[in-house]
Length: 86
Image (cartoon, rainbow, N blue to C red; front, side, top):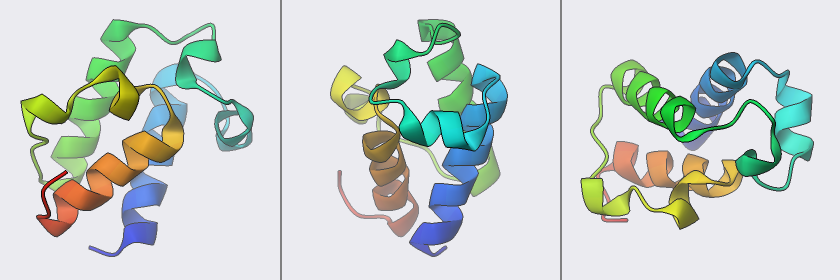
């Protein structure tokens, strides 16, 4: 799967779960800045993206550094989808 498809999937699912439009999502420095963000929602985002991409993120990669910003979350799934170590 190419990186733009992965990126689109992460953005679509994150925007849906967090109840914001993609423009707001891209304009927010960290996902934690969104009032709808919480630990349960990030778990839902990860699970839905894993299911849609048919991948499983290594639990060791589920760190705050990888999960609190859209770009690092997207990069995590791009690496995972390509089968490269994170």
